[in-house]
Amino acid sequence: MKIVIIDYGAGNVKSVQFALERLGYEAICSSDATVIKSADKVIFPGVGEAKSAMEEIKKFGLDKVIPKLKQPVLGVCLGMQLMCRFSEENNTECLNIFPLDVLKFDEQNKVPQIGWNVINNLKGDLFEGIKEDEYVYYVHSYYIPKNDFAIAMTDYGIQYSGAIQKDNFYACQFHPEKSSSVGEQILRNFINLS
Amino acid sequence: MLTKRIIPCLDIKNGRTVKGVNFVGLRDAGDPVELADRYSKEGADELVFLDITATKERRKTLVEMVEKVARKVNIPFTVGGGISSIEDVNILLRAGADKISINSSAVKNPQLINDLANKFGSQCVVLAVDAKLIEGVWKVFLVGGRVETELNLFDWVKEGVERGAGEILFTSMNNDGTKNGFANDALRKLSKIVNVPIIASGGAGTVQHFIDTFKDGKSDAALAASVFHFKEIEIVDLKTELAKQGIKVRM
Picture 1 (cartoon, rainbow over the protein chains, first blue to last red):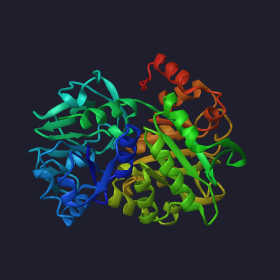
Picture 2 (cartoon, chains in turn orange, red; picture 1 turned 90 degrees about the horizontal axis):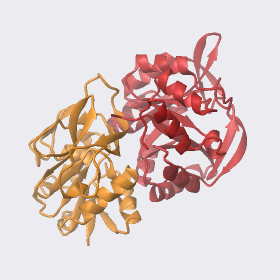
Picture 3 (cartoon, one colour; picture 1 turned 45 degrees about the vertical axis):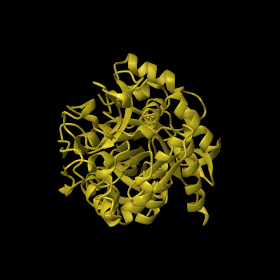
């Protein structure tokens, strides 16, 4: 099993790598298109700001590579948002894997949302063995509204997409690598996807 | 619904956890990686590491510790202490820290908050503020509470959030180490004037103090050190009691 974490200089690559290590999997961090394409599983993490992250991705030519990947890909947090069409964060054009827009939370709740919230309306293999309303860790100011690709929902004043999926592309807004045993199970499920 | 967070804080000196009273009189409280692991298993929602090492080897020791913690624990953690540049933050985030906190360096150079928020996103920039109530005015202190400034707590926090801080860690120096409860009046006011999460720090002594700061102080998270390090309060008991009181927590 070859797992590659896309390292474009703006991601929390080590956190994801260590989380996989705790599960007994070795992962390679790389920005090299050939290495990424040859992986069995690709993880696309992200912490930071959309515009500068997209610039980094383009610098490595990965904006042409990521949307064409055929193996299972898991976007995390900013990685998920960058897989969408557009982000309100500095009006950024993203990778357009999902035909969705990323919006800023309005000020009815505190922004960013930081902390543990529940996921429900779970669908598909990524959440195998995960009960409804388990807690996962979120840190974000932007969100993807409810849509047809949603495989998990979360409530923060509004119902929004905790996770989405389209074909081989999976993405979660929360951080599985920081979500205790629940997150570990989700990562394990991703690694076990065929 | 988002839960209230319980955050054990580990003050780090030369790679060891230490704990003082009112910022002075340090006691050894163990290996930070072991403690972090223990807390994550006991149900802590997050961890904060504040490095107070003052040697030249400081940064190297801290980065090594951050990496060890990231390897071991499966919950998020914040690192603070002596961070004063984009490069400092980059190294710590890449070593596995989830958020960083800045304090004195932000007062000396407020633009740092903007720069960090633009580069890494507000969500990983925690503005830590130590303040003391003096003759009815909350004054900001620097360098671990040793240097008084002319800044008013509320003005500074407001400015910090406008510049891009994503979270406020407010330590009341009047309460810190006293075990008499959190500074809930000031905390409640902070929650009113800014719309980012507020972490209450300083004064935790009993379970009731946590209940009070969530209910009365409107805090989003509560941070404490010695009550956890010296096992005066078990996190699981604390959370059970909070849940009983109708406060939403992750169990």
